[in-house]
Every structure is written in C-alpha cells, then in structure tokens.
Picture 1 (cartoon, one colour):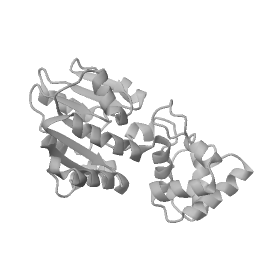
Picture 2: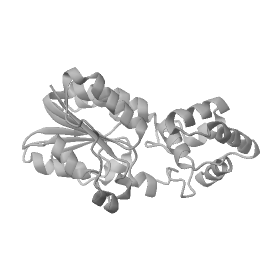
Picture 3: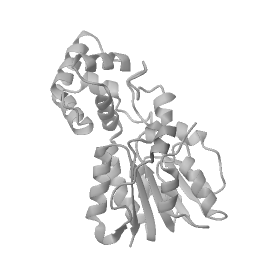
Picture 4: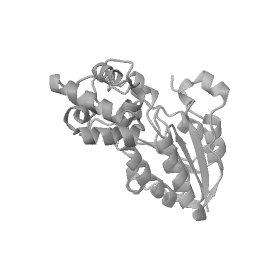
Length: 277
C-alpha cells in the first residue's frame, strides 16, 4: 500500500484552500494529491506529474485531477501545454517510490536479482547496465563519488572493469557481488547509478527556478528530499532566492518516530517549505 511521506506536514505547509490550484510534480501513488484534492474542493484542481507511466496509470481518476506523464524538469512547458494557471502551491516529493523498488523489475533494489536498468521512464536511452559495461573507469569513479559519496570509488570501479572483461554485468545480483568484493555495501553505488541514469540532480536544479516563477504571489513551495545531495540543492536554492521567498522551515522538518515505525522508508525524509513573496 502506498503511504505518503510527511502527509500531515505537507498539508500544513501547502495550506490548500477551497478552489485553489496546485501542482504535484511527483505524484507517484497519488497519496498527497488525494488529500490536497479534498481540501481544494469543489473547483480547485491538481496538475499531477510523474515520469513513470505505470504510476500515472494506477492513480484513481478524478475530474479535478489532470495527469501528465513527463519529467518535472519540463515544468514551464507542461503548464503552458495544459493552460494551468493561478498556482497556489507546488509539491516535490523527490526520489523513487515503493513501486520502483518492489514492482518495477528494473533493478532499483540490490536485494533482488533483476536487470540493471534503473530508468524511471523506458524512453530514456541510458541504463545502469550501459554505465557499468561501457563507461570508462574514470567516468564510473566520478559517478560513484559525485552521486553516491562512496569512499571506495577506485576499488569498486577497478572490480567492475575486471568483472566485465570476463562477462557482461547484466543484473543486480552480479553487480552486488562485485561491490562486496571491493569491501563496500551496495547501497551507495546503486544510489549513484540511479541518479546518473535519470539525471536526477540536474532535473531538480532545472525545476526549482521554474516552480518559483510559476507560483502565484503568496504561493507555497514544499520539497521533500531523501538524501544529502538533494537536500543540499534545495537548501542552496532557498538561500539563493531568499529575497523572493519567506522560508517557513529554518531547519528541515523530519518524520516523527511514530511515522518511521509505520513507514520505515520515511526515515531519511527532509521537508523544506517557503512562500513566494
């Protein structure tokens, strides 16, 4: 079952009111959007965006919900295409969903034997398999260092190069074995490959300025990040635009202990929020 992260806090900081319009830039399972829709009835609308077509297809239809399968990096173009105006709030719930881990069969989890894909959208040409089998040792080291903040980048890259000379690295189990041979845990390497495949950090940096421009005066922006690389981008964006923003969260809001017990994947979540002046 999809459990939206920091649901109560998202509603608190977005503060949706009847007949207002909102954008959920990462609608995923639709949990946050469903709550927003209740608050903005009867005429308020939500524009829900997700890059994964399977996520869009599973969401319960609502006449006040507009669903778009696209990358939120294209936010300005999307709202022009759908003539979606007077936006009172925008939500970004960054990272991947439970569906990607448990059902996609695209290799997001190192605890399963699946193809080394890691794409949010199958139209993307780059896969994790291409990176580990065809990129140079230097490029692999850079990905692991920049996107995984992995300490054993040289050793892992060396082991990957050695292994692919013997046979192509096709699945998550093979890659996990290689990483463990390098004396490291697979989590950070998998994170780094996923970020690289989907260009996640660049997409965030592209989307946030668009979101600020799109928001109506007094509109609210709420962003949930799940690791330090994402949170650093968000924190710096808010700081660099502080003249145009009223920052509502001096420190990031984190889940309560009770929420973490109910939903262990919420444990690394950090919420930051602001109002456009």
